[in-house]
Image 1 (cartoon, rainbow, N blue to C red):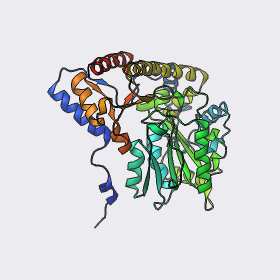
Image 2: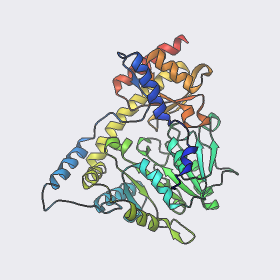
Image 3: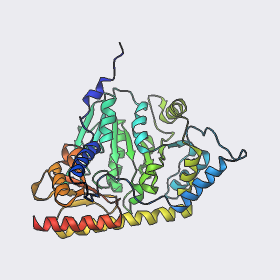
Image 4: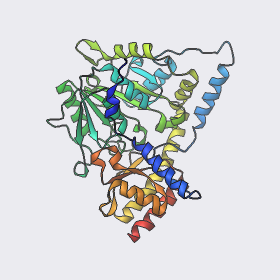
Length: 396
């Protein structure tokens, strides 16, 4: 008789966003005419930029012509896209070999798949509050997880410390859910720590395009000796609105090895074994993101979301509510008012003013008493949500 992977039984009963959807749908069944303002899940609302749309159309037309038709693409990524990404890094002072860049169907997929590179006996350090998939992917793999707590006292940016030694270290900056960002000195301490202990950092840079502070690195490879201890996973979902199009990339330096095994070479073998690559059409659209026109257009969209962040920050400043994020990230992480628990505050907003956010407890025990707001809604909905929140909490 076949034995299933019993580690699935160790997962939490309800995935965070599924539980939010259940509560929201139940409310709508009882109040079918209600207009909810959804400020929770971080899906974008602006369409793909013009440069990307043109490239996608051109790629579709290519598939209609025998001379320009493309079948299977290289499993590790089309040369034209790997070259465009490498040039993008060079403009920031990071020199990558194009063979160190692997095109993927998105950061979420890659964050789970990358664990194939590491023996199941390896443990994983996860800073809490954390994106739930970090935890779940390692639970499914049967790994021991070391939970490193963070809080207001360290700006939700803990320092490496004795007891934090681990084989794998998850870092996300700008952070989801807190919006906190590691400055250069803070991130260098993690790189030095990983190199001393032989650890490997899995650096989630999905939100790097939102950074506007010059003291904050966009890539971990801006730090000294990061190439010997880090893998960087990036996404075009929030950078360029590819949430429904699905495209990302992973950087694995050739200098990264353990016990005589090259992780770059291992990942080539993994991708050529387990995937047939990302479609030509999507990769052509992705290459347009890195064009001069594409960069200008996507940053117009990012400025729009930052305008939403300003509306929310002004509301919380007016109310005297502590928060972090918003400036260098598309999320605001607030302390729940009046000592409320995070699910209690969720229910309060839903029932009183029909605003949906994300309870901090869903990101781990350190998130209890906190709440995440996304800035990816429309300007109209964000402005209305800010007004409703101010009216509600001024009365509380």
